[in-house]
Length: 472
Image 1 (tube, rainbow, N blue to C red):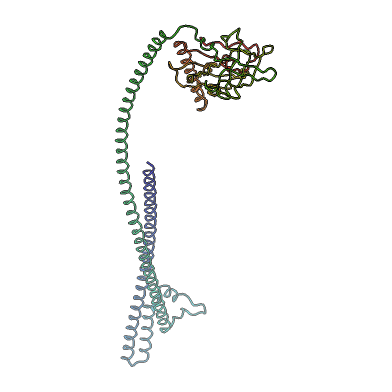
Image 2: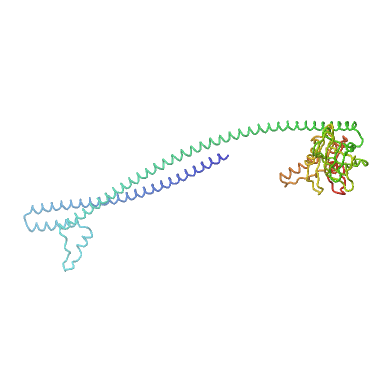
């Protein structure tokens, strides 16, 4: 498209240049024709003046010839008669005839005017004076004729020069016009080629677009069919999973799911008063390791349902059958004594127990969940000897539930991509929490709340803090 616009612009500029050149050419042609007409008019005037001067010269020559003939006739008459009186009279008559024949009308009129000195007539000019006057006028006429001829020759030379200049100008403008026409023709051909190429490209792109649109439509149809098939398979799998969970729940014990947590793992062999040191009945043969913690319970009261004990110990040194522990917590007025029960829900002599963690945990009881998703809780379970799994199934021994993740609000149109991503993550976390809680209930898997977990780990819980409730 951009290439087409450039070519069109170039064609427009070329056409404008041709128009300007043609206008200039016409103006120059008109000016040249006007100058030629003026030259021809001026030449005609000069030719007319030259013709008039030539006629006057011929008339003067004719008059001089006639006068000369008369003088010759007069001389013959005078020479043929020997009488002096007759000769004088004849000479006078001839002179008068000559004067009358060559004088202008205004001279003849002046000859009859009264003389100012009393004479009866004005004296006539002598013949020689008249002849000289005639010769002078004849010479002036010839000079004027020569001047006219020179002027005509100059005008002809100027006309020839102007004609040559006009022809040279016409040749230059004809050459420029021919070049402009050739350029215009080349631009027209290039524009036609560009239009043809553009139309071909448009046709090719249209064909490609139609082909790709058809292929995309077919692909979209196939993907939609695959999606419907996958959704159907997922629905069937969920239905089948629910049926299996329901079936499995029928065969799972229906007794107290927390009874397994109320079984003691061992007892206190010896408690050193004032030293905060105690020895327990578990050792290396039982899989005890340094750093493991056990809650301590009274042997008379047993292990309560909420898991809160009278104290807690942490293994510092392991022997074959026993282990030395540091008393990490002890209730006021309830010292550890020999025979107290010890329990750790994450410890088993035969294998590692599997735990599923879900929800958000407020471990410092400040009202804010500083452990969303339970990553810190998972580390505590692993440190205590348990194994954290990501999928809930029949091999899961315990489920640890925190608080339910907050339900995300409806996404607003002006939310940023980061806010939308956080909303999607909260929605997914809430979905996982609900699924884990429902399946744990359906499969009768023991569930540890936050407070129970901390009690069994022997960690402190603020005084008068109520036990967390299960989500059902």
